[in-house]
Length: 145
Image (cartoon, rainbow, N blue to C red):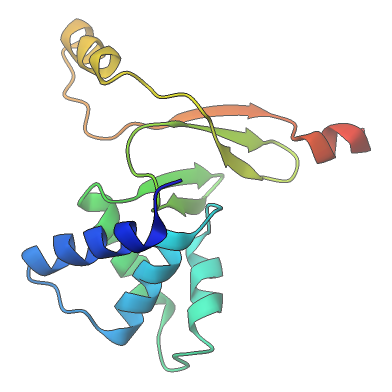
């Protein structure tokens, strides 16, 4: 996991360079996503923020997450239409997802950048976004079986 304070500052710098305003709501969302140890969904982020900013809409959360994703600053993990986000570690890395409880953990090995470039060369594709997911049962769900 990256240092949350450092990651928070990186995200602020990237957004400011692109001319985006740093509203209190956006700052709080960035604080949450940069410090998250898990992979929160947009609705989980909204539920966390709405107590501090009751007039904020869910659209603000979705729009900011979409913006950060388009800027390659967060990874989106799609779980059957319920997206979760990894803002602390945006570089390509694997996720291990429980098929029973949907828990998501980071894989602890790096995907070689050279492998992605080689895949581009072989396929002719320009890869714009990567997502590596492994599906199985987490230790808790395995013990329940």
